[in-house]
Length: 119
Image 1 (cartoon, helix red, strand yellow):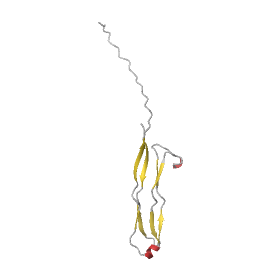
Image 2 (image 1 turned 180 degrees about the vertical axis):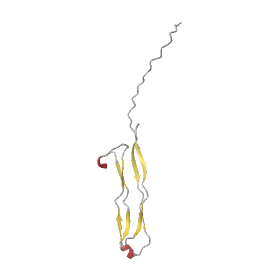
Image 3 (image 1 turned 120 degrees about the vertical axis):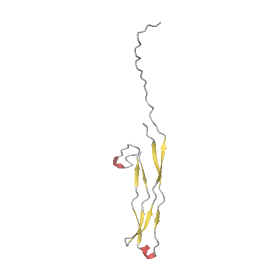
Image 4 (image 1 turned 90 degrees about the horizontal axis):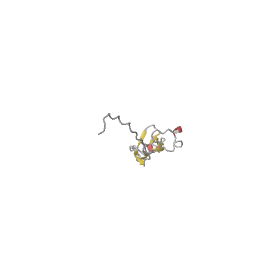
């Protein structure tokens, strides 16, 4: 069995921040707060990496989404929300290199012929 040599190619969608109408006084009480970006590591099947990092596993790739940010207001009301679509991924597969199979052929001993005289 030969595995394909594939790497994910992901395209992150554009995030949007959606807010209701607010007056200037309410806006001055707010600030933008961002979370850490979400990252995923993609590795070839059955690959074990030391410490789960790409440095210890050069065949693995890491893909990160944009950090999710929210508009946070001092009066503890999350007025705005950031909405991000799921990343769209395809797989770029290189030429598969498989070892040539090693084949042998073995013949069975023919069954004994009956003792009929030959003409």
